[in-house]
Length: 443
Image (tube, rainbow, N blue to C red; front, side):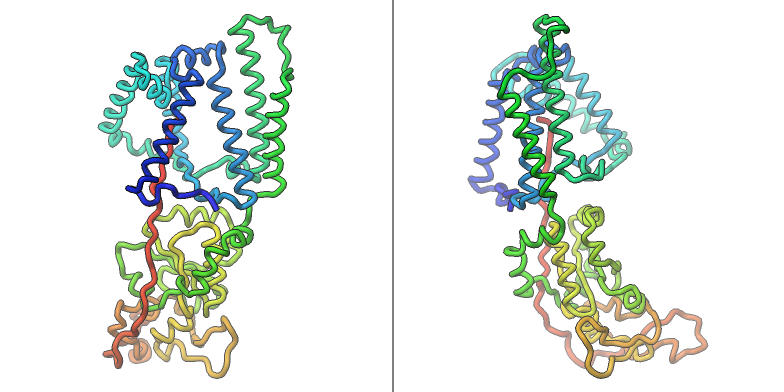
């Protein structure tokens, strides 16, 4: 499943050759389209030559429809494609500044490099102006940093804005592009070639225009008909890669390692507890949040998890392994990195870090899967040492402070005694996966 990380191993010949080939091809295409000529670029603002509009809309709708269809049929994971984060207010201001610069200079940053590469003087001067502007921006951005990062909306797309399936939105974008295509050609004919308005007709005469527009509509319609994959379908598409990790227990982390990582200040550890609310209130781990499987299918919630810092490690936990493994499957299928399962769940955790007898006692007799192995006498939440044990299990809780001091108003806690046995050996499995520093830009 795409996208393919061709530059994952930076320093190899592939990591240099692929961007070089793409850049040269893109530059050559711009030059052959006449985009190295500032007069042709500026003519679009006078409706005399709308080649730029047509080329840009062609790129947008062709790439958009192919990405939408590829994502719908499972060839591409759209969540792994970098989308520039949206900062609404500074984006509007920046767009206006760039638009004015485009009109005055006749270039955008990309086309100015094309012109400069062919030794056009105006292109060279524009590039020097861009470099000067970048320098002064870097020197002064700290003075308006608050505005520069204002109205942050993160990775925000049109389907999220309209609350519609991506395929339906694609059909609307195609319709808009075709309308702009034809409208631009009519303006070009009137203002550029002097054709009287009464002689213009909206419907194109060329058969290839109908073929092109119809093909785009068919692709967008197919994407809308199939629909974007939900969590279950994403798992089906990725099961061949992800299932072996679960079967080999590579993502099941020993509770002792989880306890250590919660003390690591270089990591942001979050625990997603999938147990019912009553059991969560009785006892839960430090930094735990109760979620349901339905919540893990919510695209908005998944988006919030993807927005966490890159040093975040997520753990799913339930009473045993089954429900937590289901939670991990939903996270992994939707592209959440650095997600693991607390091995043995809360039952094994409490076996290794037992609560004082005045708070909970082991359940007698046989129990079913995902049934609690301890009976809590009252709800303690994370207010006992079992919820955040010390790194190497240096001290074990042995009694309850309030039991020994019934007249005390102090908060409940556990006493301590020296451990009877050395720390439990375990295999460390957590390996923080670094996110690719993807970037986007003009042209």
